[in-house]
Length: 424
RNA sequence: UGAUACUGAUCACUUUG
Image 1 (cartoon, rainbow, N blue to C red):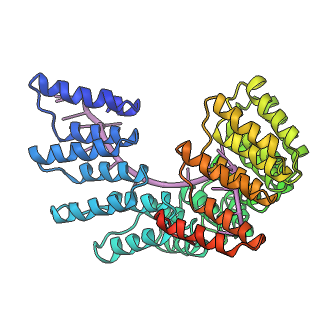
Image 2 (image 1 turned 120 degrees about the vertical axis):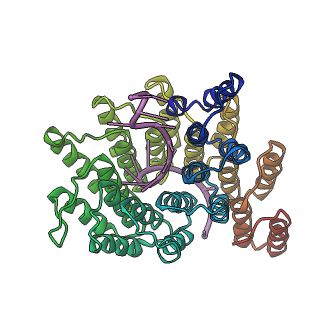
Image 3 (image 1 turned 180 degrees about the horizontal axis):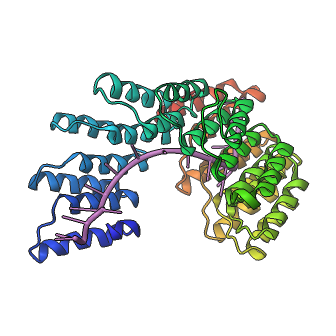
Protein backbone atom coordinates (compact mmCIF):
# COMPACT_ATOMS: atom_id res chain seq x y z
CA UNK A 1 0.00 0.00 0.00
CA UNK A 2 2.86 2.33 0.84
CA UNK A 3 4.48 1.71 -2.52
CA UNK A 4 1.15 2.33 -4.16
CA UNK A 5 0.96 5.68 -2.45
CA UNK A 6 4.38 6.44 -3.80
CA UNK A 7 3.14 5.41 -7.25
CA UNK A 8 5.81 2.74 -7.31
CA UNK A 9 4.14 -0.26 -8.85
CA UNK A 10 7.43 -2.08 -9.40
CA UNK A 11 8.25 -2.03 -5.73
CA UNK A 12 4.73 -3.09 -4.87
CA UNK A 13 4.90 -6.12 -7.15
CA UNK A 14 8.41 -6.93 -6.03
CA UNK A 15 7.31 -6.80 -2.43
CA UNK A 16 4.45 -9.16 -3.16
CA UNK A 17 6.91 -11.60 -4.75
CA UNK A 18 9.29 -11.29 -1.86
CA UNK A 19 6.56 -12.21 0.57
CA UNK A 20 5.92 -15.38 -1.37
CA UNK A 21 9.62 -16.17 -1.56
CA UNK A 22 9.83 -15.90 2.21
CA UNK A 23 6.95 -18.24 2.66
CA UNK A 24 4.43 -15.61 3.66
CA UNK A 25 1.51 -16.08 1.33
CA UNK A 26 0.06 -12.67 0.42
CA UNK A 27 -3.54 -12.34 1.48
CA UNK A 28 -6.39 -10.74 -0.38
CA UNK A 29 -5.63 -7.27 0.87
CA UNK A 30 -2.03 -7.54 -0.29
CA UNK A 31 -3.21 -8.39 -3.77
CA UNK A 32 -5.75 -5.63 -3.73
CA UNK A 33 -3.17 -3.06 -2.68
CA UNK A 34 -0.84 -4.23 -5.37
CA UNK A 35 -3.48 -4.06 -8.09
CA UNK A 36 -4.37 -0.60 -6.93
CA UNK A 37 -0.71 0.45 -7.13
CA UNK A 38 -0.48 -0.87 -10.68
CA UNK A 39 -3.67 0.90 -11.63
CA UNK A 40 -2.44 4.20 -10.26
CA UNK A 41 0.69 3.83 -12.37
CA UNK A 42 -1.34 3.16 -15.50
CA UNK A 43 -0.26 -0.49 -15.66
CA UNK A 44 -3.73 -1.90 -16.08
CA UNK A 45 -2.58 -5.12 -17.69
CA UNK A 46 -0.41 -5.95 -14.70
CA UNK A 47 -3.37 -5.33 -12.41
CA UNK A 48 -5.50 -7.64 -14.55
CA UNK A 49 -2.79 -10.32 -14.51
CA UNK A 50 -2.63 -10.08 -10.74
CA UNK A 51 -6.37 -10.57 -10.62
CA UNK A 52 -5.98 -13.75 -12.66
CA UNK A 53 -3.25 -14.93 -10.35
CA UNK A 54 -5.41 -14.14 -7.38
CA UNK A 55 -8.34 -16.08 -8.80
CA UNK A 56 -6.15 -19.18 -8.99
CA UNK A 57 -5.48 -18.90 -5.28
CA UNK A 58 -8.56 -17.55 -3.62
CA UNK A 59 -11.81 -15.87 -4.55
CA UNK A 60 -11.36 -12.17 -5.22
CA UNK A 61 -13.72 -9.82 -3.45
CA UNK A 62 -15.54 -6.80 -4.76
CA UNK A 63 -12.59 -4.57 -3.90
CA UNK A 64 -10.29 -6.70 -6.07
CA UNK A 65 -12.54 -6.19 -9.04
CA UNK A 66 -13.01 -2.54 -8.25
CA UNK A 67 -9.27 -1.97 -8.13
CA UNK A 68 -9.00 -3.39 -11.63
CA UNK A 69 -11.98 -1.42 -12.84
CA UNK A 70 -10.31 1.75 -11.65
CA UNK A 71 -7.08 0.73 -13.36
CA UNK A 72 -8.98 0.29 -16.62
CA UNK A 73 -10.85 3.55 -16.15
CA UNK A 74 -7.67 5.52 -15.61
CA UNK A 75 -6.10 3.93 -18.66
CA UNK A 76 -9.04 4.91 -20.85
CA UNK A 77 -10.28 1.37 -21.41
CA UNK A 78 -14.01 1.71 -20.84
CA UNK A 79 -14.98 -1.37 -22.81
CA UNK A 80 -12.62 -3.63 -20.95
CA UNK A 81 -13.98 -2.15 -17.76
CA UNK A 82 -17.51 -3.13 -18.71
CA UNK A 83 -16.33 -6.62 -19.66
CA UNK A 84 -14.81 -6.96 -16.22
CA UNK A 85 -18.00 -5.66 -14.66
CA UNK A 86 -19.88 -8.47 -16.43
CA UNK A 87 -17.27 -10.97 -15.41
CA UNK A 88 -17.61 -10.14 -11.75
CA UNK A 89 -21.36 -10.53 -12.05
CA UNK A 90 -20.87 -13.96 -13.60
CA UNK A 91 -18.50 -14.82 -10.79
CA UNK A 92 -21.30 -14.09 -8.39
CA UNK A 93 -19.93 -10.84 -7.04
CA UNK A 94 -22.47 -8.08 -7.01
CA UNK A 95 -21.06 -4.82 -8.34
CA UNK A 96 -21.47 -1.99 -5.87
CA UNK A 97 -21.55 1.78 -6.16
CA UNK A 98 -17.78 1.89 -6.48
CA UNK A 99 -17.85 -0.57 -9.38
CA UNK A 100 -20.41 1.46 -11.25
CA UNK A 101 -18.82 4.79 -10.44
CA UNK A 102 -15.52 3.51 -11.81
CA UNK A 103 -17.10 2.36 -15.04
CA UNK A 104 -19.03 5.61 -15.38
CA UNK A 105 -15.81 7.50 -14.85
CA UNK A 106 -14.16 5.32 -17.50
CA UNK A 107 -16.68 6.45 -20.08
CA UNK A 108 -16.42 10.01 -18.87
CA UNK A 109 -12.68 9.98 -19.48
CA UNK A 110 -13.26 8.51 -22.93
CA UNK A 111 -15.69 11.31 -23.72
CA UNK A 112 -18.72 9.03 -23.92
CA UNK A 113 -21.68 10.33 -22.00
CA UNK A 114 -24.42 7.99 -23.18
CA UNK A 115 -22.89 4.71 -22.03
CA UNK A 116 -22.13 6.36 -18.71
CA UNK A 117 -25.75 7.32 -18.27
CA UNK A 118 -26.87 3.83 -19.29
CA UNK A 119 -24.69 2.33 -16.56
CA UNK A 120 -26.15 4.72 -14.04
CA UNK A 121 -29.60 3.59 -15.03
CA UNK A 122 -28.60 -0.06 -14.90
CA UNK A 123 -27.15 0.33 -11.42
CA UNK A 124 -30.43 1.73 -10.17
CA UNK A 125 -32.93 -0.44 -12.00
CA UNK A 126 -31.13 -3.77 -12.26
CA UNK A 127 -28.93 -3.78 -9.19
CA UNK A 128 -31.19 -1.81 -6.92
CA UNK A 129 -28.33 0.43 -5.92
CA UNK A 130 -29.06 3.80 -4.39
CA UNK A 131 -26.71 6.32 -6.00
CA UNK A 132 -24.63 8.36 -3.63
CA UNK A 133 -22.96 11.71 -3.98
CA UNK A 134 -19.92 10.31 -5.76
CA UNK A 135 -21.96 8.32 -8.24
CA UNK A 136 -23.97 11.40 -9.10
CA UNK A 137 -20.81 13.45 -9.42
CA UNK A 138 -19.27 10.94 -11.79
CA UNK A 139 -22.41 10.99 -13.89
CA UNK A 140 -22.61 14.77 -13.92
CA UNK A 141 -18.98 14.87 -14.99
CA UNK A 142 -19.76 12.48 -17.84
CA UNK A 143 -22.39 14.91 -19.08
CA UNK A 144 -19.78 17.46 -20.02
CA UNK A 145 -19.16 15.50 -23.16
CA UNK A 146 -21.99 15.56 -25.64
CA UNK A 147 -23.40 18.90 -24.67
CA UNK A 148 -25.58 17.20 -22.08
CA UNK A 149 -25.45 20.10 -19.65
CA UNK A 150 -29.19 19.92 -19.20
CA UNK A 151 -28.90 16.28 -18.15
CA UNK A 152 -26.18 17.28 -15.69
CA UNK A 153 -28.48 19.89 -14.19
CA UNK A 154 -31.33 17.40 -14.02
CA UNK A 155 -29.10 14.97 -12.13
CA UNK A 156 -28.07 17.73 -9.77
CA UNK A 157 -31.72 18.56 -9.07
CA UNK A 158 -32.55 14.87 -8.71
CA UNK A 159 -29.90 14.23 -6.09
CA UNK A 160 -31.00 17.26 -4.12
CA UNK A 161 -34.55 15.98 -4.33
CA UNK A 162 -33.37 12.73 -2.78
CA UNK A 163 -31.81 14.59 0.07
CA UNK A 164 -28.22 14.14 -1.06
CA UNK A 165 -26.18 17.28 -0.50
CA UNK A 166 -23.97 18.10 -3.44
CA UNK A 167 -20.31 18.23 -2.46
CA UNK A 168 -17.90 20.79 -3.80
CA UNK A 169 -16.80 18.20 -6.36
CA UNK A 170 -20.37 17.70 -7.52
CA UNK A 171 -20.84 21.41 -7.98
CA UNK A 172 -17.53 21.75 -9.77
CA UNK A 173 -18.48 18.98 -12.15
CA UNK A 174 -21.76 20.76 -12.82
CA UNK A 175 -20.00 24.07 -13.50
CA UNK A 176 -17.66 22.32 -15.88
CA UNK A 177 -20.49 20.50 -17.65
CA UNK A 178 -22.41 23.75 -18.10
CA UNK A 179 -19.33 25.54 -19.35
CA UNK A 180 -18.60 22.87 -21.90
CA UNK A 181 -22.25 22.50 -22.85
CA UNK A 182 -22.68 26.15 -23.79
CA UNK A 183 -24.56 27.13 -20.64
CA UNK A 184 -22.21 29.90 -19.63
CA UNK A 185 -24.71 31.88 -17.58
CA UNK A 186 -25.76 28.82 -15.62
CA UNK A 187 -22.15 27.92 -14.95
CA UNK A 188 -21.46 31.36 -13.54
CA UNK A 189 -24.73 31.25 -11.60
CA UNK A 190 -23.65 28.02 -9.93
CA UNK A 191 -20.41 29.65 -8.84
CA UNK A 192 -22.33 32.60 -7.43
CA UNK A 193 -24.63 30.24 -5.56
CA UNK A 194 -21.60 28.59 -4.04
CA UNK A 195 -20.19 31.95 -3.03
CA UNK A 196 -23.51 32.79 -1.37
CA UNK A 197 -23.65 29.39 0.23
CA UNK A 198 -27.19 28.64 -0.93
CA UNK A 199 -28.86 27.50 -4.10
CA UNK A 200 -31.97 29.02 -5.66
CA UNK A 201 -34.15 26.98 -3.33
CA UNK A 202 -32.19 28.20 -0.32
CA UNK A 203 -30.63 24.84 0.25
CA UNK A 204 -27.11 25.00 1.61
CA UNK A 205 -24.20 24.61 -0.77
CA UNK A 206 -20.50 24.11 -0.14
CA UNK A 207 -18.24 27.12 -0.57
CA UNK A 208 -16.28 27.29 -3.81
CA UNK A 209 -12.72 26.02 -3.98
CA UNK A 210 -10.06 26.79 -6.53
CA UNK A 211 -11.41 24.17 -8.93
CA UNK A 212 -14.79 25.92 -8.89
CA UNK A 213 -13.17 29.17 -9.98
CA UNK A 214 -11.02 27.46 -12.55
CA UNK A 215 -14.00 25.71 -14.08
CA UNK A 216 -15.91 28.99 -14.24
CA UNK A 217 -12.97 30.80 -15.82
CA UNK A 218 -12.62 27.98 -18.30
CA UNK A 219 -16.26 28.48 -19.23
CA UNK A 220 -15.48 32.11 -20.06
CA UNK A 221 -12.40 31.01 -21.98
CA UNK A 222 -14.43 28.78 -24.24
CA UNK A 223 -16.35 31.82 -25.41
CA UNK A 224 -13.31 34.03 -25.66
CA UNK A 225 -14.60 36.15 -22.79
CA UNK A 226 -11.15 37.26 -21.72
CA UNK A 227 -12.25 40.32 -19.75
CA UNK A 228 -14.63 38.23 -17.66
CA UNK A 229 -11.89 35.67 -17.14
CA UNK A 230 -9.50 38.33 -15.88
CA UNK A 231 -12.22 39.90 -13.75
CA UNK A 232 -12.85 36.55 -12.09
CA UNK A 233 -9.13 36.15 -11.46
CA UNK A 234 -9.06 39.57 -9.81
CA UNK A 235 -12.08 38.76 -7.67
CA UNK A 236 -10.50 35.51 -6.62
CA UNK A 237 -7.34 37.35 -5.63
CA UNK A 238 -9.28 39.91 -3.66
CA UNK A 239 -11.33 37.25 -1.85
CA UNK A 240 -8.31 35.07 -1.19
CA UNK A 241 -7.23 37.06 1.85
CA UNK A 242 -10.12 35.67 3.83
CA UNK A 243 -11.24 32.61 1.90
CA UNK A 244 -7.77 31.17 1.69
CA UNK A 245 -8.48 30.18 -1.91
CA UNK A 246 -5.75 31.56 -4.15
CA UNK A 247 -5.22 31.28 -7.87
CA UNK A 248 -2.99 28.42 -8.93
CA UNK A 249 -1.25 27.44 -12.12
CA UNK A 250 -4.46 26.06 -13.60
CA UNK A 251 -6.21 29.37 -12.96
CA UNK A 252 -3.54 31.16 -14.94
CA UNK A 253 -3.70 28.55 -17.65
CA UNK A 254 -7.42 29.08 -18.00
CA UNK A 255 -7.17 32.88 -18.05
CA UNK A 256 -4.42 32.68 -20.65
CA UNK A 257 -6.57 30.35 -22.70
CA UNK A 258 -9.34 32.95 -22.57
CA UNK A 259 -6.94 35.56 -23.96
CA UNK A 260 -5.81 33.08 -26.59
CA UNK A 261 -9.32 32.26 -27.74
CA UNK A 262 -9.92 35.99 -28.10
CA UNK A 263 -6.59 36.48 -29.84
CA UNK A 264 -5.60 39.10 -27.26
CA UNK A 265 -1.88 38.67 -26.98
CA UNK A 266 -1.07 41.86 -25.09
CA UNK A 267 -3.33 40.98 -22.15
CA UNK A 268 -1.98 37.43 -22.33
CA UNK A 269 1.56 38.67 -21.86
CA UNK A 270 0.44 40.84 -18.97
CA UNK A 271 -1.27 37.91 -17.27
CA UNK A 272 1.82 35.82 -17.80
CA UNK A 273 3.96 38.46 -16.13
CA UNK A 274 1.49 38.84 -13.32
CA UNK A 275 1.61 35.11 -12.71
CA UNK A 276 5.38 35.26 -12.48
CA UNK A 277 5.15 38.19 -10.06
CA UNK A 278 2.60 36.33 -7.97
CA UNK A 279 5.11 33.53 -7.58
CA UNK A 280 3.10 31.01 -9.58
CA UNK A 281 5.26 28.32 -11.11
CA UNK A 282 3.98 28.70 -14.62
CA UNK A 283 4.15 25.53 -16.65
CA UNK A 284 4.17 24.65 -20.34
CA UNK A 285 0.37 24.80 -20.53
CA UNK A 286 0.45 28.47 -19.54
CA UNK A 287 3.08 29.36 -22.10
CA UNK A 288 1.37 27.31 -24.76
CA UNK A 289 -1.87 29.18 -24.21
CA UNK A 290 0.02 32.46 -24.41
CA UNK A 291 1.58 31.34 -27.68
CA UNK A 292 -1.87 30.58 -29.02
CA UNK A 293 -2.89 34.15 -28.36
CA UNK A 294 -0.64 35.21 -31.25
CA UNK A 295 -2.51 33.00 -33.64
CA UNK A 296 -5.31 35.20 -34.99
CA UNK A 297 -2.86 38.02 -35.62
CA UNK A 298 -0.30 35.65 -37.12
CA UNK A 299 2.47 37.16 -35.00
CA UNK A 300 4.85 34.29 -35.42
CA UNK A 301 7.99 36.26 -34.48
CA UNK A 302 6.45 36.99 -31.10
CA UNK A 303 5.35 33.38 -30.76
CA UNK A 304 8.86 32.15 -31.43
CA UNK A 305 10.25 34.73 -29.04
CA UNK A 306 8.04 33.41 -26.27
CA UNK A 307 9.02 29.85 -27.14
CA UNK A 308 12.68 30.80 -26.53
CA UNK A 309 11.82 32.81 -23.47
CA UNK A 310 9.92 30.07 -21.69
CA UNK A 311 13.02 27.90 -21.71
CA UNK A 312 15.65 30.56 -21.21
CA UNK A 313 13.93 32.84 -18.71
CA UNK A 314 11.42 30.62 -16.94
CA UNK A 315 13.19 27.31 -17.21
CA UNK A 316 10.14 25.59 -18.67
CA UNK A 317 10.94 23.09 -21.40
CA UNK A 318 8.74 23.54 -24.45
CA UNK A 319 6.78 20.38 -25.16
CA UNK A 320 5.15 19.05 -28.30
CA UNK A 321 2.14 21.29 -27.82
CA UNK A 322 4.40 24.35 -27.53
CA UNK A 323 5.88 23.59 -30.92
CA UNK A 324 2.55 22.71 -32.45
CA UNK A 325 1.09 25.97 -31.20
CA UNK A 326 3.95 27.87 -32.80
CA UNK A 327 3.42 25.92 -36.00
CA UNK A 328 -0.21 26.97 -35.95
CA UNK A 329 0.82 30.63 -35.67
CA UNK A 330 3.11 30.13 -38.66
CA UNK A 331 0.25 28.52 -40.50
CA UNK A 332 -1.90 31.54 -39.77
CA UNK A 333 0.90 33.77 -40.97
CA UNK A 334 1.23 31.56 -44.05
CA UNK A 335 4.94 31.34 -43.50
CA UNK A 336 6.31 28.09 -44.96
CA UNK A 337 9.91 28.82 -44.07
CA UNK A 338 9.23 29.43 -40.42
CA UNK A 339 7.01 26.35 -40.16
CA UNK A 340 9.43 23.96 -41.84
CA UNK A 341 12.28 25.44 -39.84
CA UNK A 342 10.39 24.72 -36.63
CA UNK A 343 9.71 21.17 -37.75
CA UNK A 344 13.46 20.63 -38.03
CA UNK A 345 14.18 22.50 -34.84
CA UNK A 346 11.83 20.44 -32.73
CA UNK A 347 13.39 17.24 -34.02
CA UNK A 348 16.81 18.58 -33.13
CA UNK A 349 15.50 19.46 -29.67
CA UNK A 350 14.48 15.85 -29.19
CA UNK A 351 10.79 16.46 -29.66
CA UNK A 352 9.68 14.53 -32.69
CA UNK A 353 6.90 16.11 -34.71
CA UNK A 354 3.65 14.22 -34.29
CA UNK A 355 0.54 13.87 -36.42
CA UNK A 356 -0.74 17.25 -35.25
CA UNK A 357 2.54 18.91 -36.25
CA UNK A 358 2.36 17.47 -39.74
CA UNK A 359 -1.33 18.16 -40.08
CA UNK A 360 -0.70 21.81 -39.30
CA UNK A 361 2.06 22.06 -41.87
CA UNK A 362 -0.02 20.24 -44.45
CA UNK A 363 -2.82 22.68 -43.80
CA UNK A 364 -0.42 25.57 -44.32
CA UNK A 365 0.77 24.18 -47.64
CA UNK A 366 -2.71 23.38 -48.82
CA UNK A 367 -4.09 26.74 -47.73
CA UNK A 368 -1.45 28.52 -49.74
CA UNK A 369 -2.12 26.44 -52.82
CA UNK A 370 1.02 24.37 -52.46
CA UNK A 371 -0.52 20.95 -52.91
CA UNK A 372 2.73 19.37 -54.10
CA UNK A 373 4.44 20.34 -50.88
CA UNK A 374 1.43 19.11 -48.91
CA UNK A 375 1.69 15.64 -50.41
CA UNK A 376 5.42 15.66 -49.88
CA UNK A 377 4.75 16.19 -46.18
CA UNK A 378 2.19 13.39 -46.23
CA UNK A 379 4.91 11.08 -47.49
CA UNK A 380 7.42 12.46 -45.01
CA UNK A 381 5.17 11.85 -42.05
CA UNK A 382 4.80 8.23 -43.08
CA UNK A 383 8.58 7.90 -43.30
CA UNK A 384 8.91 9.41 -39.83
CA UNK A 385 6.52 6.85 -38.44
CA UNK A 386 3.68 9.30 -37.96
CA UNK A 387 0.33 7.89 -38.92
CA UNK A 388 -1.81 10.22 -41.00
CA UNK A 389 -5.25 10.43 -39.44
CA UNK A 390 -8.68 11.54 -40.50
CA UNK A 391 -7.77 15.19 -39.97
CA UNK A 392 -4.85 14.80 -42.38
CA UNK A 393 -7.08 13.55 -45.14
CA UNK A 394 -9.93 15.90 -44.38
CA UNK A 395 -7.48 18.78 -44.69
CA UNK A 396 -6.25 17.59 -48.05
CA UNK A 397 -9.73 16.82 -49.37
CA UNK A 398 -10.94 20.20 -48.26
CA UNK A 399 -8.35 21.87 -50.42
CA UNK A 400 -9.08 19.54 -53.29
CA UNK A 401 -12.52 21.09 -53.13
CA UNK A 402 -11.02 24.55 -53.00
CA UNK A 403 -8.89 23.89 -56.05
CA UNK A 404 -11.50 21.88 -57.96
CA UNK A 405 -9.76 18.51 -57.94
CA UNK A 406 -12.61 16.07 -57.38
CA UNK A 407 -10.73 13.02 -58.71
CA UNK A 408 -7.92 13.59 -56.26
CA UNK A 409 -10.43 14.02 -53.45
CA UNK A 410 -12.04 10.68 -54.27
CA UNK A 411 -8.66 8.99 -54.34
CA UNK A 412 -7.95 10.36 -50.89
CA UNK A 413 -11.32 9.23 -49.60
CA UNK A 414 -10.58 5.71 -50.78
CA UNK A 415 -7.28 5.86 -49.00
CA UNK A 416 -9.06 6.84 -45.82
CA UNK A 417 -11.17 3.70 -45.85
CA UNK A 418 -8.24 1.57 -46.97
CA UNK A 419 -6.36 2.69 -43.89
CA UNK A 420 -9.26 1.55 -41.76
CA UNK A 421 -10.24 5.08 -40.81
CA UNK A 422 -13.89 6.03 -40.61
CA UNK A 423 -14.70 9.06 -42.75
CA UNK A 424 -16.84 11.56 -40.90
C1' U B 1 -2.52 -4.90 18.56
C1' G B 2 -0.18 -4.42 13.70
C1' A B 3 -5.17 -3.05 10.83
C1' U B 4 -8.39 3.94 10.71
C1' A B 5 -4.43 -2.16 5.73
C1' C B 6 -7.05 -2.45 -0.24
C1' U B 7 -11.45 0.24 -4.59
C1' G B 8 -15.10 5.22 -7.09
C1' A B 9 -16.31 11.69 -8.57
C1' U B 10 -14.50 17.82 -10.39
C1' C B 11 -10.55 22.46 -13.33
C1' A B 12 -6.31 24.91 -17.97
C1' C B 13 -2.88 24.34 -23.71
C1' U B 14 -2.08 22.31 -30.08
C1' U B 15 -4.20 20.18 -36.12
C1' U B 16 -9.28 19.78 -40.79
C1' G B 17 -14.36 20.77 -41.71
